[in-house]
Length: 396
Ligand code: SF4
Ligand code: SF4
Image 1 (cartoon, helix red, strand yellow):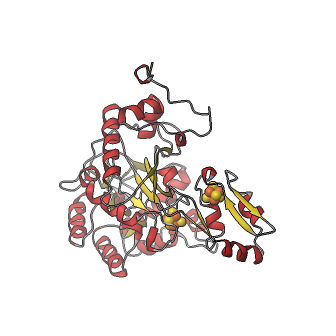
Image 2 (cartoon, protein in one colour):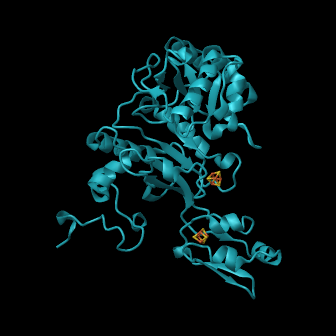
């Protein structure tokens, strides 16, 4: 960083015991003038209390409609290296597993063509390459392609599917999140690279209801692992937990959201009322050696999660309580294609799927994509009466 660049407000963010993005930006600024201008622009934004980026101008690489986001500063005279500072999204591997060689390759390519600044990872899941010029886009993409990487989604297309680490490291996974993420990414290449819809669409997969990728709040389609039968309880391990001092009644049974567990303090036996269990994972998290998910595993499909833009933030709705999740995932792919067709036909510009369902009603959506209404779609009896019988469905 040049000696005359003063960043008193950013310097504050380097204080304290935590790693600081400002420190990393200063390291990049020592080698790259765009990273240095970025420090200056950010300091300026803190002073002015506004962002100094503007929208406008479509940039991209040959054959792709998405994957590059055009960025331009509104102060190009003061910060000439930020006149063009485009972001590239690179599709991440399932579960974010890299070799150090792969990471070095990514960084070398980016130092050669861009600012050297990255964000691992964006909220969609992609590797974010922060800042390059229009002329450098195609050469950067070509080198990434040579190295085996592809761009992720951006704009009104399918965003890069993402998933939790799943069975690679986690015993709770009820389906192979990594395989499904990889499979969907290949299957839906066209949808990923060619923006064609009213707005963005995100698919996220979590192997169980702990939902480590926060799919329920962030994905238009959340696939969350679950089981169809009953949790498996090992009574010897329950006794071992009780004898080790765990207050099973208070810490486990009283916190079961549906009060589906009963603990006998005398016999130290734990029993479940299977039909009351909502498969929330709480008891399994508390006593992983004693309680396991059931044997018949699959996933729940939910729709409509999103952050605020046109309407407020939405959590996802259950639309299929249980679906087997095994390759080649045909049932899921057929359903998601029907949903996309319906959204594409009926959605307004920049209307996410959840907002469209909110506007026209869940009953209409279910009927038009051919899904039967089920009790799991309803929060509690009479709380959510969006499904009505049609005249032709009533047997006289
Ligand atoms: Fe494990 Fe469940 Fe988290 Fe996936 S969501 S990493 S399966 S705990
Ligand atoms: Fe209760 Fe959740 Fe355990 Fe089911 S998984 S028994 S709902 S704590």
